[in-house]
Image (cartoon, rainbow, N blue to C red; front, side):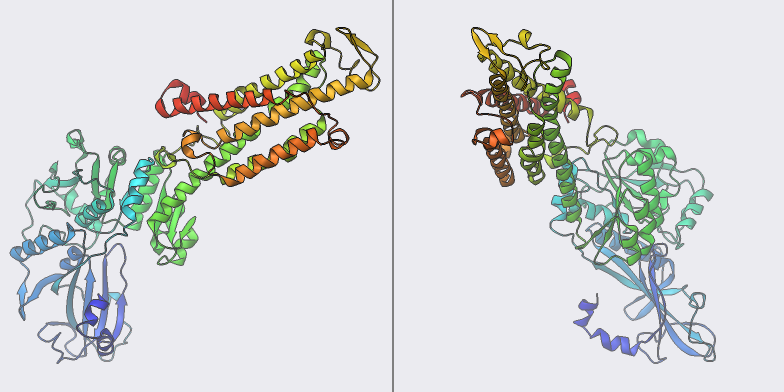
Length: 627
């Protein structure tokens, strides 16, 4: 407005001419802003206006701007063509028509009025609010301000909807303006016909106006209570003009007794209705998909947050004012504006948006989901190699079999070969459908869930155990040892003090037995590492096929897998190092085959699971096995 007026007259000149001596700031309850200025009796702007107050004293002007219906409540006349006219029904109809026309276009409308009064010259220049007359003012006109949403907001809203996130508009704007803006940004779909409260009140209609005469919401409730029981119905927007018929809009009380006739999934709830909603009413309102709360106060924000939380929903609330602090504090995630937000709001919030851009919230949701996904992938990958490490101990304790892995080999897997691939999963880019998934269930979808443990230990873990045990059996069989011969011999053979043993025409002293055992442990070691080298690529995604996700999208993973295989080669095939450090020896030529075969089986198994998850998301298999 200031920039617009500068084209007519520099605003600095007016501010010097009219010195502000008192101010009543805007608040969400009154919805108007008042300044008191000292004026000259000969001033053309204020000449001809009746002056309230003392007969003598300095002349002051009261200037008010704010919500048009609230401003008009304080006016008894209007200024037109250089003359004063009384506010009558005809003027109010024109006022409502202009208001609806601006509001239905998504323009924020301000009303302006003024009056004059005299203040005793001997009195203090410091006014009290009660000293400022705000009745019988002169209405000047309406100003419509076009504040289009940022171009990125509609796409962000659409992304939220695809992600199963409901976005409510909670605004202090008029319902007409709120609906128009909600359509622009996509909160209300273009083909939706939002339910807007409308009533045919069974009482004598006040002839002066179809808008409220009182400036407070409490008086609206009181007026409704004093009337006889109304008959209510729902008024959808006008199909031809796109404007809503808000006849008696500010005095209506939405009757939820007629909810059975409401077929649309969009609703607009004016703030003057919120205080009277019952538990059943709230449940009905919050069950809608597209919701707009208009003409609300910070107290209404807090009530909306509490009602949503009572339904078990996770709420993120945005705000920038001091009065928004309780709602920001009460919400599960309070989001304050970093540029235009007050310090109190920033202190109460959990997140501060440094650019005041709604799109940043959506980006934050996307990154939050990505972090959660990558943590689950890392855990699933890391846990899956534990069972094959524990199995040699279990076999030794239960059946007295020689160990399949040495302690140093286990440590090298946990601290060397697995570190790179596990860390690389934290760098994994998002899956294509990450924002097409519904929000996770807080009670069921834990970071470490039963399906994830089943996947790591009972699915992939069992496959890798089977591959390691098969390689273990095959190596011993190559040297003539069967499992029945090996049972309960771990404390007799394959040690430095073992007696000679002959099998299949071949005899093995203690050194030969140790060499066989080293080949066995090296093969188990290689099978496990090679299986995990394949498995890490399958952990890149939870739903999308890894071939559609791009196998080579994560450079850190490529480096990690190369490092893993390099460490395996050094520990197994480099002479002297393999014997001195790992206590192993070069295995048989075919020792890599079980690991590669197991890796391919793990790949096929994972791709099959993901296919079912994508195409049968509601199946029993998906509900039990998707992690």
